[in-house]
Image 1 (cartoon, one colour):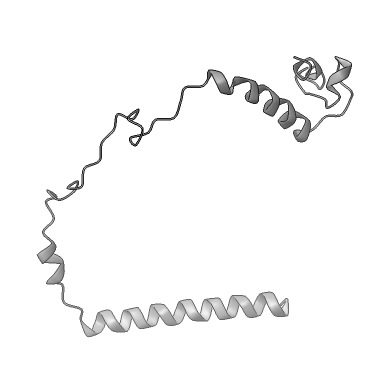
Image 2 (image 1 turned 30 degrees about the vertical axis):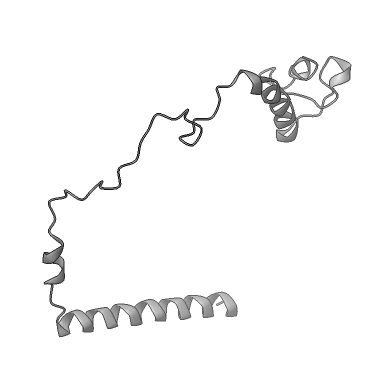
Length: 114
């Protein structure tokens, strides 16, 4: 309660301070102060939160399916029949060369400061 009583500052009247013993905001405002009060509030709510769900402890309700996706309509044998042509290889080589040139050129630009 002492931490929450410091949350009276700022333009919205909800920013918190750090000196919780004063019962009022001490004038220090920021993210750190907000997080400190949030931590204090959350630590007091731990006992009210529901427990973890665990299949090991028998409290979980979901079950896995090792065969999930095995009834898909895509035939994997069709994938093996795709033939890679010389044009595919040339295109991949050109694309790789462009990427390498871009990386080297970008690195040189950053190093030299051009």
